[in-house]
Image (cartoon, rainbow over all chains, first blue to last red; front, side, top):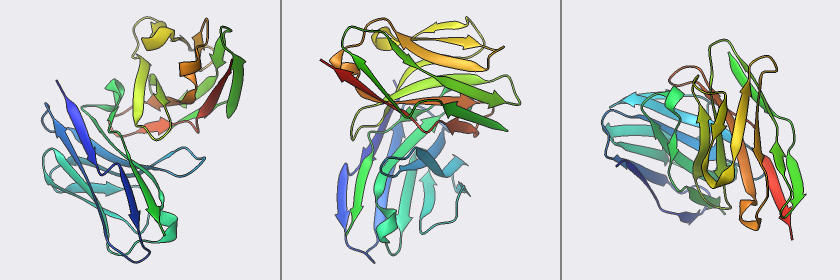
Length: 112
Length: 112
C-alpha cells in the first residue's frame, strides 16, 4: 500500500536560518507531488508541485524553493526564513487530480 | 477555471443532531469533488469523493454527500454528530491533474 512520510512534525527556527523539510512516498511510482502551506485561520495554499524528477512548478513567488532529487522524494527549502514563513506545511501525492490527494501528517513551522 | 466556495466558515451543532456543511463549485470541466477532514495539527484525511459515478456518495464515519449538477453543489451531511466529528472540513474540486482547488474550510464545533 502507498504511504507518505513527512518530517519533522514540529520545528522552531530563528529568523534568517535555513529550512529543509522532507517528504517521501512509498508504494507508488512517478507520483505527482505537492507542497501546501496552511497559515493560521486560513485555507490551503499550493506552493509547489512536481510531475517528475527535477520538474518543479511554483504557484506563488516566495521565500521558499522545492526540489525533487528522486522520484519519491520532495524537499521544501529556504536559505533564510522570515517570520511570515510560519505555518503548517503539508506534503501530498497523487497519480491524477481526479483521484484525489493523499496528505502527509504535516510540519508545524514556527519562525521566531 | 475551477473554484469552490464553502458557504459557512463555522458551523456549530449539538451532539446527536444532523450536520450540514455546504459547498458550491464552479468548473469548466466535468469535475471530481472531494471532502477532506483535518483535526488540529494533523494532515488532511479523505472523507469521500465523487468522480462521475453515483451522485450520492457515502464516505467514512457516517458522512455522505450529494452531487447536484443543476445546483453546482456538493454538500456534506451526517445524520447524527459525534463529539469526535469536531474538526475542519475542506471541499475540493478537481478537473485536471494539477488543478485541485480547495475551499477556505468550515470549522465544525460539536456541543455536548
